[in-house]
Image (cartoon, rainbow, N blue to C red):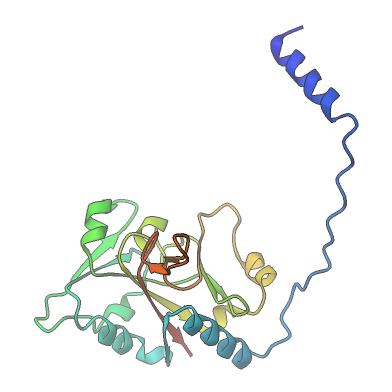
Length: 211
């Protein structure tokens, strides 16, 4: 008998009298009972409670809204698949705002990402009940690192991407894709219950919701 077989037999022997695994109940809510306007209001309420900055914007005014938020910035990073029309009015006072594009062929380093003023991404889906925005690494959202290293994250979310409960969001996501779940700006209260922001992600979260 090999050492592996000996170890496996000992494990099986130790577990022989262990109780069976109980069946997990699956009777939780799987769909929303809210209207679209209610989901929007609930999401905004949760995001504001998390200290995120929320801007309700008609889709046609997305470029102007983004330009206004970036008025004081000198450099930003965007994923390669971000809709170009959203950036059509982006510039600073000198008209020289640097837009760095992160793509599979040109991957920015951690140092380069740390040097920019903000990152701008789209989103995959948002859960109004928990105030969670989910990114899945699609071309308009980019690699996980670009939304975690810069100190400011500007996320553009379409109103039709808002669902009420988590199972609805999970159903829209591809389980094999890298995911980032965001519930407000990065913060922790681990040390002496003092809230500290910007610990393991952006210190500032701006959410533009296109209505």
